[in-house]
Length: 115
Image 1: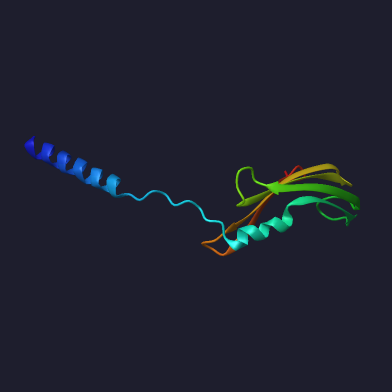
Image 2: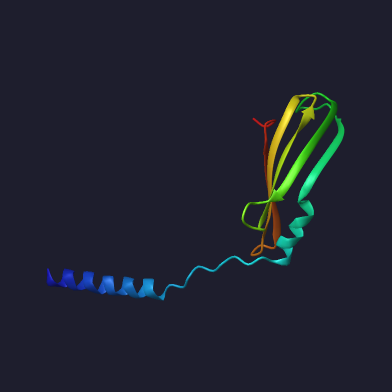
């Protein structure tokens, strides 16, 4: 029983040192590549001709998109879009960002035309 108390006591002391020695989390830093995302901020519109294929019939399409910085930071741009196509009304959401550790830009998008 005394050995168990001693092991528990030593463990608690080591855990305490580990917590006390832990560094504060680093605040993310804006890189020049994050600032380059500014080029996407704004209101956009377009039109075109969709060709018939496995994802639907062909015909005219048009859309508008409103892209803003994600609220409270300049690390991501959020774009909301809507439009019409031969398949009907479209709505979408896109998020663009930059991952400094990998040196790559990212984009994630969803819309109501996917199943």
